[in-house]
Image (cartoon, rainbow, N blue to C red; front, side, top):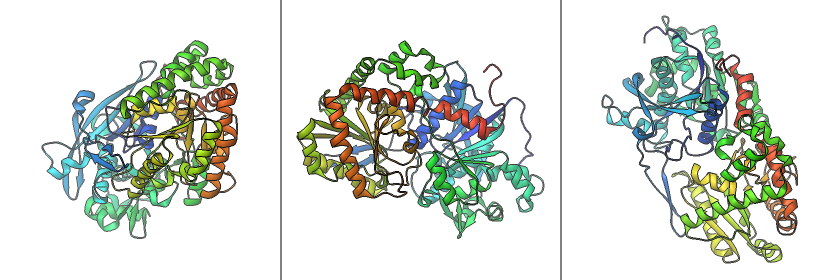
Length: 574
């Protein structure tokens, strides 16, 4: 390792994330974490904050989802061509894995903001002739194979990310770790800090100097979600000296290196992604000063065409300042309704194209699209099939559109998808239930703008934030949601949407929550939708004015700039 020298030029914040969602044609994301990363980078380009993104290329993507008539999920590899969307960069970097040198190339994607400012995102790639076959696969599959593969990927992202930014001439003032996958960057910084004397001689002062350069956002409200690796595996992958340095820094717990703990130890600023998540995280990590910056979504990406046109005519300032969506409160209700009719029509056309089913434009349409995993409880809506039938007969038709992938090894998530298919069979033809395969950014734009109600039923307290309901609010779609994550802050009963259950209880009671959900649907939401369309449109308008104006990525990034990044990391003309 050569002596680190700070390159010339303005300083940047390096934002490292295992997944980044930028375009539907780039399968470099699996779900909410990646979409959040993409929205963060888009907001940085809009505002003009000097941010640089770093992720892995994922040549094989996440996976393509296939569902048979019973809801059984199978997977196939994603085929895409990075060469058609990304620009290869000349400099290469090297990391050591299991004693071998592994070479890394970077591919660049430029995120263009509304004022033509550009934020570069570098995707790291080990598929190079100089590497062995196995090393070439390390930037292939997102969240693939086993823990050993994952650890090696995290070496590429963390250690390789620091090395690549140096090779590219980036002068980094702060490193922002989006979840613990990139936490090994702290080890790379410690190596730079102890150059000439060795990691074994790292002092408390060295640790603190690394800490002053790092920011950590945790998205994990349960211990099971943290990446942990046996110490012996870490010794094999990283080498004895590096593994000992991690132990000396007190990041080894019960014989495992915990990536969340590593990030906590070496970060000067730590935040959860909602007010409630801060509370949960402070309980999980009582020795660390956890703050909160609630997530937001990128308005320009998630507001549908009909609503962009409406906002342009009524509040054109929203294009340069998303806070102006607050003034949506003055938009006539009939214009909200007209924009929604157009957006809903586009969704129903897409459903017919994908599933061959024509849904009714006049029927109450509920959307539920999340990663298919047990804690999100996609089947809570079907806890009482007979009651669903009864409320539909009493008030009017109901149709439900689902989307979401289960991880290939998540049998609980796959069972949930099958349960939705079984419920669809039980409820037909009175209630139409559609599960669309291959849920991605493109489909999300249709769903989050075209349904009439967004349903969210996570098991408390396992929803760190959630952003799907925020995307819906951008298009005037109110939520019916369990009071967890961001909804505790965004919920105003009957104004921005409706709550499932009681916020005073820290953990879920599935029986009580199912009853609450049915009560709201049967006695409040369906009657309002069918008998008081102006009242329903008023809730839609408030969802825009109150929720969309605040829960956006622009506000979120300003908070990071002021509270976490701590300095002038913007162009002079912004």
